[in-house]
Image 1: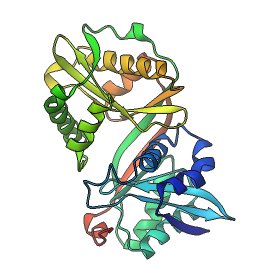
Image 2 (image 1 turned 180 degrees about the vertical axis):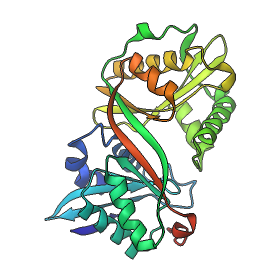
Image 3 (image 1 turned 30 degrees about the horizontal axis):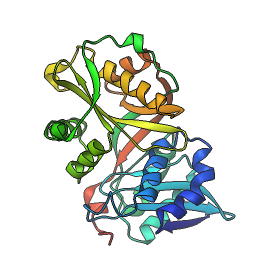
Length: 291
């Protein structure tokens, strides 16, 4: 098995296509980010001091495992064997590429973490446990909150930025460049609000793949919760995206959040797979500044 790092996101997508599309929805997070990097090379990360990483493990000339990392976020991995995870870890370690954590479906994150922890001499710590949901139809009758669905405009940008920061603070994630990213998404009509009569909830979509799309941030400020706004907005946005031609939508919910895991199945989402987050000590991954 051989480790391979890619300098060109388009080349990565071309070579990883067979592997990733084999389970397109399961690999939707990684695939959506890779496709965006391929289409907008240099745009999304111009505001960051760290370049994205695209890499994988080859066997017999074919890619059998893939990974993408947009620092300082975790390394996102595909399902892989323990042997492939070991080859991936060694390849990154040999190139002194720091890894803040790992996330992916099934056993893959644990397999990588075991190999990586052996190399750096420090154990991983658990992050969130996430469930990926999938749907190709939506039940709008299950979402009956008062109000209406509309796209955010630049006039809403201050609110969107405040709510975005609040969302990431609640889930404990680092988000460099969020103001620029969210303003760009507003301009591209990727951010939506539930109005009653003013804004009471926000959601956005990102990461299109050949057949699907991912709903990302769904946020209701604490004082507006328990009124069904998030359910109504997610249902409306899902319906909108399916009407736009996407065959399915995916989204992620923290398994510790009982509310999210209750509302999504009500509007038609079904569990697809579980993702695991694992974190590595900061001192073990800040040794490298990617140039």
